[in-house]
Image (cartoon, rainbow, N blue to C red; front, side, top):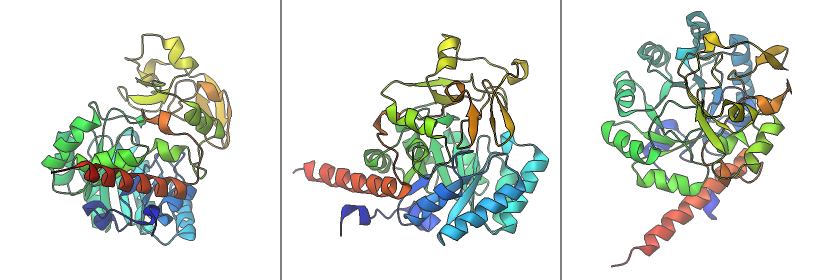
Length: 341
């Protein structure tokens, strides 16, 4: 049996019913059915990113996942940036379809957790602090995803993952997945060593063949070197004020210069720079370019975690999952071999 076929059993794999302790992030836009299904079919746990999508699209994407795999998956929603009526309808679409798991992010919404639990769903909650981890667990979350400041996309964590992860692992009883800058098996091995039960990856899968991201975005990820991401609240239109993101440097971050913080979406002009499926994309809004997006792609939010320099190719999701596992097992064995009496 080669290393890619071996696994590391953890409380996370047991709770989620997957073979490998790898969750693909429910990235709004890029994490459609093709990606979620590919990760689950490969042995990980795929999440659909359905943030602020219509109930009809959610139902369609859930059905599409099930056409591709019979393995467990989940749907990611963000209550804090979704209008209450839409959130209610989104949840209803998920529950009507019998989704096995829901993932939530940003502020801990105890009511959303309670609704998901009543519907028979497992609940994963992505948090950025020890206090929120405990709050989510107390509200009924089955898995905590702890996000460090190294993460790409919307960043709720304000501290480094290597410090925050063991603190959260010590504070809660449920399985904990590490998120932020992890793109390879060394990251998985490190997360396990720090008390985590697995990992939650965005950037690694954003550059996959199955990702619904635009090829331009994927190519920028592959070409990126060290120190090419920016932590800022510049791209904030469509989200509440004070919502940091991590993106690749581009013309917009360069134009901002030293003023990377303090932007209010209500005070920013709405300048259309592109379209996606007929919908306008404004300069400095939170929409990243997807497969059907047209316009000034370079100026859009090109989300990326801080580990992007180690993403070197656009690969199938299965290859990414298997490579991460093989690297993690090799790293753990090498570390064990280095221990001598």
